[in-house]
Image 1 (spheres, rainbow, N blue to C red):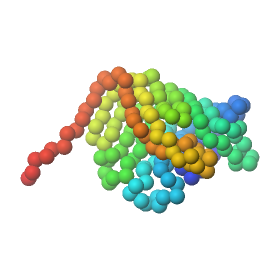
Image 2 (image 1 turned 120 degrees about the horizontal axis):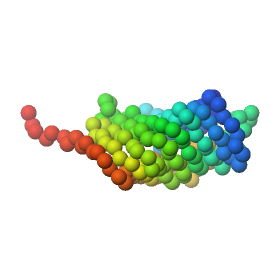
Image 3 (image 1 turned 90 degrees about the horizontal axis):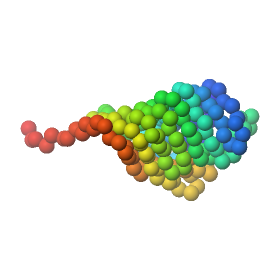
Image 4 (image 1 turned 90 degrees about the vertical axis):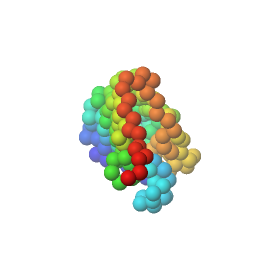
Length: 178
């Protein structure tokens, strides 16, 4: 099954309405396209889609009850993704220099941040590392974004912090002239 809006797609096989806007879905794949949905998708200013995969599922909280018979989905306001979680974005530049991937477990989502206290492995282009206790602060989108799109009111990522860094590899560009 697929639920989608201008900036948000939710893919799943099974769901159970838990009441009060909470649904349990298995498995869970979310695709979020940050930025202005009215902007040309080929524009260089448009950010790359961010994909979250949670094969063991998620509990998602919406501001309204889900009604699949009427294809009605409220605005996503929070959630918990269980088991192993992979989040990735292929970036907008050719190659992998701005690709982002992180793998963790038991991820929590709110309107302002995504966080986990579990171990995290990450890669951004040629840079990579691992640690635990990750917190991603989200930029708030325009006021009309969430109500129009049905998805979260997110404009992008403000910051990413890993509280306990265990390993970090930073590629430094070689400035030598040939």
